[in-house]
Image (cartoon, rainbow, N blue to C red; front, top):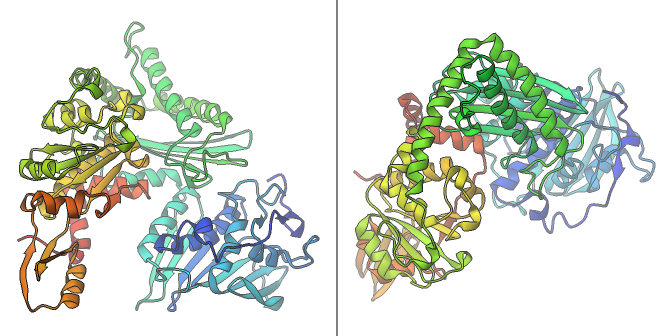
Length: 635
């Protein structure tokens, strides 16, 4: 590092701590379980930033019996000197003043995942109590807080030969809807963090159970081991994972990838350990390097002749699993969500480094090069067949047609923002839905049985399926390289299936289709799941609907069990008459819709591969793990 000085002069103040307890959603997203876990991430990310700066290689996170959290690292420790502007210790500034930290251009950090000076003070503000200890200058310094306010000023409590920071806090139960930490959620997050921070050892301990749980995440191979992990439920088609690293103009990159025998492209990109789920310039640079290098090598080795058509990027990336991780001093993201990197120089840097290193890899591994090119060539042939099939889904003046392919009952509204389409299981439910709907803005598309499992199919085979073609045609936005969200005819695509095992299977097949081929519709917030009721209870000519067993018990407790004239468990949407279906599931004023989103793309890929892929063992393990949670199993 060009500047290893990290003291009180590096802590810069942007503004005071205000309104965090009154408006916590503004700072941590929500007060649900997601926000609760975010508190831990903020403190751990500070330790990770010390690791990225080269001063920390161990982090221990402990969930204590009282559900409090402690985080210990062996970094340099938060500066303890007096801050020149505030007249208090720099450590107190970090924990009590919003937007105070060593990551605002003061030189404390070259690389960080975000403005985590915000994090320490926000965690403090939203905790019933917080204790911080700094191991520095041969001493242990301690400070105590309560709901963001100082209880004890920073003072020495002992001596040490260690350096680092210890933070122990208990989330305020008056603020959070949920205050119980989920070990599995933290485990997944810290495993990913360890993959992306080569050499860092993260230990996660849960003291709430006997014997206590303990997991250690430590990957000297970094993103190479990440690719191995991502491919655990897939079948690689060559052994050697491609890996490269490099640095230029204060941008360092790590890239690893391997092809498997599947057809889906799974590339995960990160900037300063932030998962950029919408990609950005680092992903563009990687894709360009991959396409250019494979074609250059194929022509150089006469595998492709000069007059042959070049292989497309999509064909080369078929079946690829890859991770791109960059570290950059001044990351620029599109929007507040930090899901797309926009630094323009990054594209060229990634492109140049990957192109050079990948060409060397292909020349040193001609067998692997041949396998990659053969798979891409087969994908190209399949894509040509798919292009012909896709032509069948194109229509002229789709908004002017009242009758579309399949059994679609279209709506009369022409503004896509006001239009919604229900994908319904079977003709019986489709008939009820068509009678129940608002013809003005609700379209109905019934499906015949279970659609093709696209996890095991190439695009050409998928487009040979009439049911899938009907959906693509109805949506009107094209697919794959032809996808244009602006042409989407409905801004709510609602999956409405029966509340039984078959219905759940159909919904999973549909979600697999959207995740693999229409991920932009998920990230754009266009995909929803309808929530039909499970039970009808009728008493004194009044109908009560319950959407789960808990609601049923509450209804029965409230109205009493005596005198009930009817209690019905719905197994299919077709069992409801149109009025019931409208009142419970389709009326915007009374229905419940669940928006589908991707909170964790790595986990989503893992689940879809396990449940819908070729390998049986991952499915068996999934069933064994979650079987005890199953309710309402149809026998």
